[in-house]
Image (cartoon, rainbow, N blue to C red):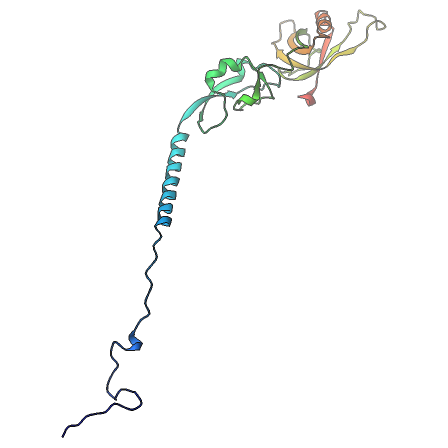
Length: 230
């Protein structure tokens, strides 16, 4: 006699039977393949290479040294730049608008457009081919002054008043003290001589230059420093 089991009418598998691997519960959702973006990858590579190249060029360029002009002495605006006021210095070639040292012979023939301080790296904007201080309408007058007629510690670039001081031999009724130049710039200061006099050159208007020279020859000139006018 053959014994067989009929499938259940409710659709469930007979007892003892397990669902196969191909059943709905064992199936997985399909995973979409990763989308590759070659353009972004190429851009990233280019950025990395570009940054490395820029850093390399910066390091290589910073190692290049060039000779430039540096100011070592204060030079007042409008004054001729002396050779003693400049010095050769080595700097990195990073695009700074410097004056090359090979033009130092031209620098000493120019005038300071602004007050130049020691330690300043000279640029073309700081110099001028001419000067308002020593140009048309201006003159340099040399003075031989005695002690008491010139302030101590006077240096080139200082501003002074040029005063006419009549000697004791002149009558007070005919000669009075007066200001000949209200603001004159000191062009140079010489060393004191054995007689105690000091040589000072000042820049004044050409209209008063002969008078200043005349009174200076008779020892009737005195200078008053104007510290606030520097």
